[in-house]
Image (cartoon, rainbow, N blue to C red; front, side):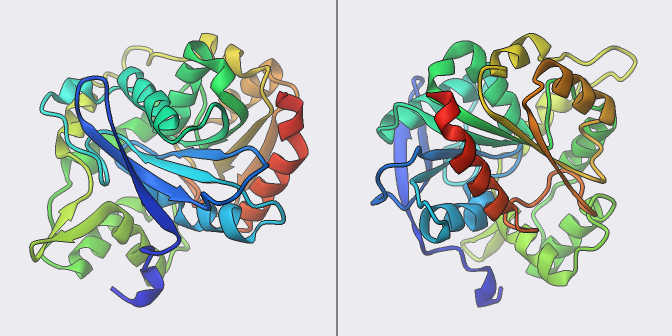
Length: 301
């Protein structure tokens, strides 16, 4: 891979132990920064802390007000240990892991950015430990999920194999994502491949446990999908920014409208020509996120 996709600098690794003994990990950016509220970033189902590298580098080193940024890898993803029991790959346990990760990093509270799965975990934190959160940023996720997107993600997971080359990895992510990101070029897909795959012992492998697919095996669109509207009500006391893709198949206009009705102060950003989930390092989103945090974090006091 070319050097422009190198995200090895600007952060230090943090490790901690889950309540059931797994070794979990994450990235700390700008840990010398003091003053403003830290930010915690929570990734999507199969993603990991590297997903937020562009955003974290901006918030920690380039913004007008630089701050600590903690990006966590859930169990079975990124640098974290895989769980022998795939049923532990659920948002309740991952929410508990998130709390433990914040404690391990010495954070009493933080503004939290959640992409997809990370946003669902935020909903649970609103019920479990609302005092941990200041500002909240949901990236292409709400309390109700469109089944079309879940089916696409399920198919993506079922088709996930270890490619024979980096070009094979790029082809895999572009084939699965071109409907959501029709204007991505080869460099964009190469960057996405670096987030999803890594090279170990000469082989290119997924940076997530393929057993994550088991959790989506029983999706039945003939029955209503579970929702988190009661938990979303717990976010109404927090400054909230919703970022969503114009092409998203996971959050619908109806869901966004209902969210706005329940949380009238919720700010929104639609990212044109992107789908699920918008790249938070693109389209001036780091600048907009920094502005939102600086404007609203005092409201969470």
